[in-house]
Length: 259
Image 1 (spheres, helix red, strand yellow):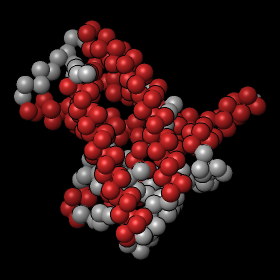
Image 2 (cartoon, helix red, strand yellow; image 1 turned 90 degrees about the horizontal axis):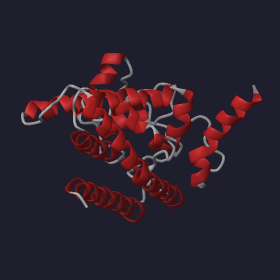
Image 3 (spheres, rainbow, N blue to C red; image 1 turned 60 degrees about the horizontal axis):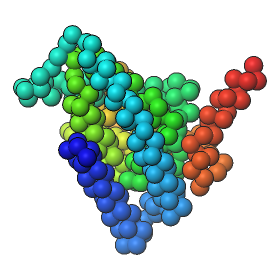
């Protein structure tokens, strides 16, 4: 096991522990309804499937990215601190467009919807990711490798960003004033998971919210309009992870063959 793989597993265990602590406190101490047993087990099941998909696809995508990096004439040594800042900004910018595409492009939404089709918002929702999306999500980061950033460094920054994104899925952190204005915070991400007309397709940012401000997709969380979590319409079988992963894909295929 490489050092990077070890770090990834440690990060995954820490995130899972954070979810477990939040779930237990919510369910048995606060009893505030933010967690539902069936919904949480669905999220865990989806996470297991996602991890299994990542094992194989991650290896193949790494080979493809290294092959691309070997032929690009550009190189970043990463010896200077600002190289890492540039890579972070590039990755976050690409993540914004990847995420936005997942909402506004039909076939991509068919995959990404699984992350949004729960009526709850908590750290377990941060583990709900598309099994099919694993096949192509990495392609959105090809431009970073083409710019000369080694896939190993790219993986590090993507992992850090993923950890931050996971932690934004909590209902227990309120507004953070000036921090909400430039970072993707729990308040900003609650808006993103809302199905209120005011909140739909807003706040796509990964670690930063500045891209949403630049491209007109930012919406703050409003005290006078609580977030209604989920999608329109909600799935017919909310406790079936296979249904949640594929029901919109089935609809896409049916439409394609009915023409």
